[in-house]
Every structure is written in structure tokens, then in C-alpha cells.
Length: 62
View (cartoon, rainbow, N blue to C red):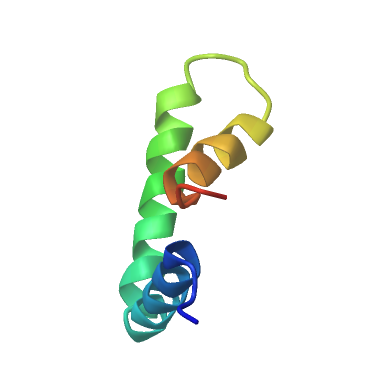
């Protein structure tokens, strides 16, 4: 039996992320910084930055 496509993709992406973890860490930091800049003009709670980062990195289907 074949694994569901999303499980297959998850593991493929997982190993790719392991290979480029340094770049990924830089990317996460950059996105967090951009989100902070985008929302800095409004007086929103810090949780909004977390939501922004989650939105960027949440794979479809989860």
C-alpha cells in the first residue's frame, strides 16, 4: 500500500529541510522580522507575529 500523498510529501519536505536547515533558520528569522515590521505600526499583541509566521510555514493539509 502506498503512503498517502501528504505523508509522502511531508517526509520529503522534512529531509529537504534538514539538508538546508541553516538557510531555513535564516528564512524563519527573516519572515519573523518582516512580520514584525508589517505589524509594528499597529498596537497588536506579539501573538500576531506568531500567527504570521505560522501562516507562512504551515503546510497545506494541516
